[in-house]
Length: 329
Image (tube, rainbow, N blue to C red; front, top):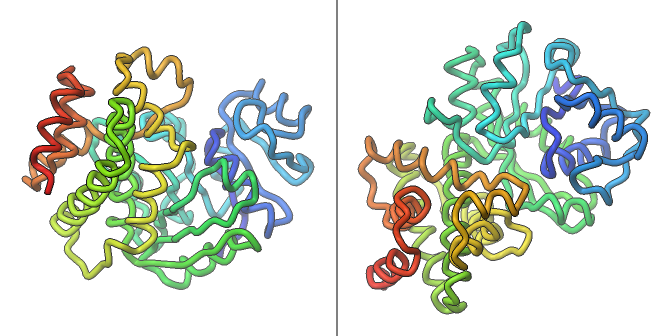
């Protein structure tokens, strides 16, 4: 059912996923768009740009910079490209996707379309729901690289396929489970990045742990309101794939969205923070997409609104967070 597996992307999370997959698979396929990056990878035995401490047996990896070769060769495709670049990669495709098992590990929304990635694959490439899965946390690539205990949730409406992929990811340091809530998991993974930016902004403004706890509890309530509106099923927001992922992204020093928010709170402009980080904070793009989506949903989302005002309307973080704090109880 799983067949040949490909990792589609070359960043930190893609590298961590490749490490996990090679615990159980004799070989994997790996799509990296740059030939020079592939040459360096083969020569060094590790990703030359991300998680360089993780060493690979490159003889077990089939690298390709041609997305069509990868898609044609493999049965399961794990997409880990940043959401703003997904459409650009897929535009090169000549091989159809509908017969492939698509796993999206992208924590973002496809810009312009304002669709979570599973919906985009479904609408744009006719991939049936049975062949769509999402990989949820809580997990940081850096901790996977260190072999620290990690928990993953595979969301898919087809329990058999979800379990097969979850078993493929499991190891002595990776615990896995399944869940049918694809839409909820994916929206939660977008929102937690927005809330991590909020947590970072507050950290940069020198708000303390007491306030951070109130911020995170309000963020969980805000997330629950949105998920219930967009896809009203029976779910427990304190489950690790929702609240756990929210907490690790909001509190961890490994969280690039928290780091990005901290820089904004310290007075950096958006552009200067992005340049200095040299990594994509998905929450920046996710904030605008979620704001646009919520124009149609009309959910009360004061934290989302505050982050949007700071990042896109250039309103002072001091002013926005003070107004937000007065609304909390």
